[in-house]
Image 1 (cartoon, one colour):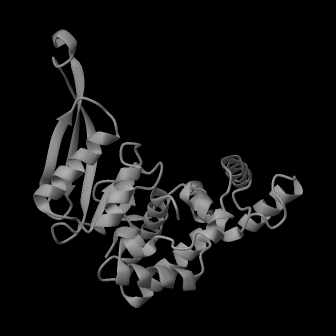
Image 2 (cartoon, rainbow, N blue to C red; image 1 turned 60 degrees about the vertical axis):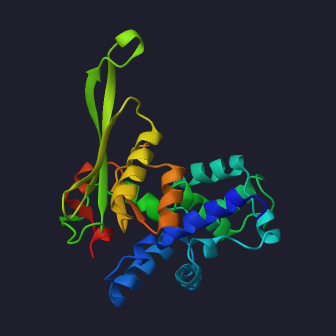
Length: 266
């Protein structure tokens, strides 16, 4: 790709796809199940997934950057077409990607053959509208079990709490502060904690950076779905560090704390 940032975005996305397969201690049955789940959610073939995994293990993050430019240039989906596809998926969550493309062609939004199924599938997945995402949003219960990791730096967790009002504003006016904490799951040790005067994405990024500098790189980190946690910086940084980035299921606060999702069990 000409644009290095776009190439990195693709590599970050692919690392996150592979994240469930990189956990230590998986047996062959668990690995097969997770591969099948990823293929079902994204529309990727198992062969493609195996190729990504082999490339990542051999070359790391850099190996997942796309190298071919000409073919991808023709596969850019305009934002307005992607939004139309998202509306079609939201209208009927069970609607397949192939059906969405046919509807777009029938309505004259795109020319026949202009959009490839795999390209649209990847775009929908990155926006949170894959078939797997839609099934997840429709669920009302959460299959989770109480679990705690055994060793330090296997899993970190983080949260934000509203703090007191302090006289730190203009002319000593009171201003609310916010506490961000990074916690090691196994030891329950506070890796880093700090009060911040703003509630934006930079506070989580700073806290994570400080914790890594003090205690090393975690194998995985677990966040809820707040916008302060879902940032491009965090996704890119974790991908480069080799840290699996995990999020709680939407609308399922019970999956936080000691209640872990099935994907987190080793």
